[in-house]
Each structure stands twice: as structure tokens, then as C-alpha cells.
Length: 46
Image (tube, rainbow, N blue to C red; front, side):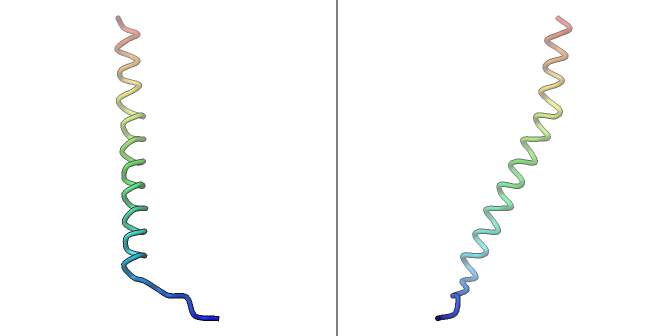
């Protein structure tokens, strides 16, 4: 059996993609937990 080929560029791009998804999900959760309840309260007050 041959050894596993370790490509540093492939690992770096995978880690970068994971961090980008993490940041996107974090921003989405902040948006949902702050803006959406405020909009719902504004709609109920009318």
C-alpha cells in the first residue's frame, strides 16, 4: 500500500471553506435572532 498523499493546498482550501461557512452561519443566526423578532414586534404594534 502506498502512503496517503498529503497536499497542503488542498487542506488549506478545505479549512478556509469550513471557516467561511462557519462565519456565514454565525451571521445568519445573529440576523435571525435580532432583526426578525424586532420586525415581528413592529408588525404586532400596528
